[in-house]
Image (cartoon, rainbow, N blue to C red; front, side, top):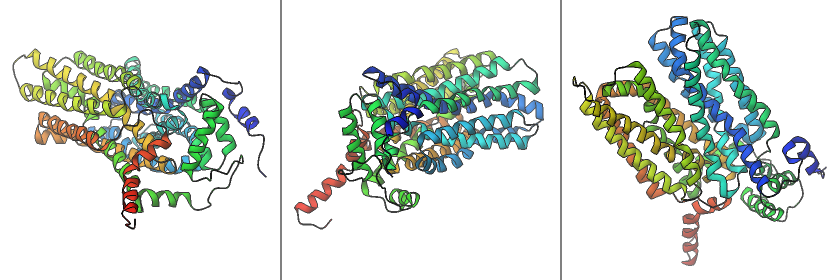
Length: 508
């Protein structure tokens, strides 16, 4: 039997929907939902950042070798593949909101295991569980993109990257504040503190709406319209968006019941068939775009700068540990405070312009860093200006990263993927991202020993230049367009070819 009292059910499930939201309140509801979802990204950053200082105390407490610490630090990026490759299927099956609830539970369990670990094996188990949570965090930009108003989508989807960097800073701060405790207690408390935002996320999901696009995909049109009514400016806008989403989901326009039947075929097999095995030209173009920008984000060396900045500054000639720590904190701070620039401008000047500017600036900054290191590496002279050049180059690099490819990679990936393929497609992108990140961070020392540290950054500069060219040639602008309009944008060339073929009497 079709359920008729949809609005009552949603009001009871989502307390924020109990009031009759109007005007700016609707925007606030979307913003609050995006902020809550972004806590999962904050946890991603925290659990990566906290290890930078915790590893010192873990090594002393458990008497681990440098190799064990290196593996423990970098392996979580590879563990995250298990989460990112299953997150899409999970969110398509149980919903975006429930997947975020599951993510909160994983982020609670992982650090808890680490906190009570007394040997290397159990720390590795805890890092594995946490790595799955990192993989599941791919759903954050998907959820935010699907609940955000068109005019704020660039701003809100960038919250995820801002939250990652805030999490990194909080990890550094916890390292600093707890460093004076006993070796046995300090690192355990560092990981225990990460449980607090996990609990906050878990309870926060109780007041978040489900994605209206996921609801339509499941045939729950009544619930979808109710949520859209509270996310859009008017009832008329909600109805218009619902019709666009229905068309994208393949639901007939004449279907107006609150619950409609959807195809019973295996959704998972259908998605992989359309995404990889037999993609249309437009889907193939979208998938290549997503995988490419995810590759370029990490292959241009951002994590080598973030994780190895003390080593980089030391190579430039900086000697004092306190100075190295201060410079490293400056890198994290500048990287974080630059992200709001992208959040503000992405819906004004556009994603494409910021990506081009950001990648070009990254390439120039890396060349400057390479030159500084080439001159300063092995120098016995006290060349303060070389240190200054390297610091400026690194700060410039992370700034350009944070106004472009840093926050906009996941935002753009989430926007351009078609509704039915979005969760799985973005998850594939995340898998590419984490794989490249793991390879880059675990090979950086070997790389610079082989081609010098300056040569390493020249290589990253070349990759950043390739990223700039790729964006300029291949990426269309998505500013101001609904998710459904973006699907048409990427399929335009395919439709033009099809139309030209028909006009010439050619079978297509």
